Image 1 (tube, rainbow, N blue to C red):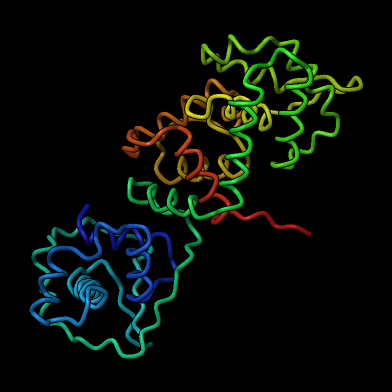
Image 2: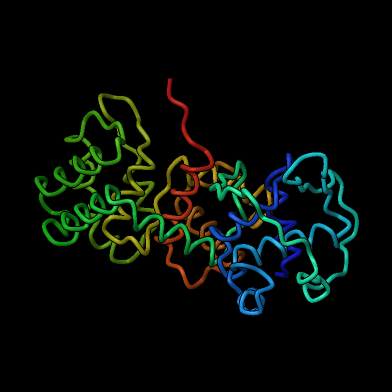
Length: 310
């Protein structure tokens, strides 16, 4: 992807427009490969710019002045860049055509604000890495997962005793607030399924089997919980389904049509696995595990589609 294409992609997420400074912060956060490039460092060494932040900002200004499809509003300071509502054909321009050395080099009073985008950015390896790094800094979630890992893999790895299953169901219910008010019935239900061999074989139908349960003559579907229960036994094989993942999948389907699924397909775990893997392939994320993709979708979903509590 060229630098000009990157600017267009970022602006598509903000119909109201962005300042060059906001675009710079977005690039630094989500597209680090475009920040501190060899060209940036070379121009700083030549003292054309005071630092790499300044060099990147100059490149953004250059793109805004060179590419006809970017609308520049000069009535405010700093200027605001937008894309037209209806874009024409792509403009053939390379990054080498943008002369960044002859631009104005004024950056007085620029504030480096972190930008929160209202629309998710297109997944990329760099974006994934940024979110996984962010996940590593969330001590509460990291320690919660470590505690569950100790329980599921060291203390109670099998599902042959009701005490072990009940302990795992209760821990998941507490940590994830899954609203299971009868953990004992759910534990008995899982124990009766004799799930260990099916987990070992990566039987994806197991999730829907665990999810459907009758409690006090009422049929329940604890689908999200069931995906969490299986995932904590085999995190790289069983990604977690929840409302944030659902919102992210539906958004990217609408934006890029990476898979022709319907919303109801996400509740069929075998189909859900196919959808996640097509997401992984479409955005060239093969170097990341399903668990890492799951973390990205959950963390980004919390950021872009936060729940509104009364």
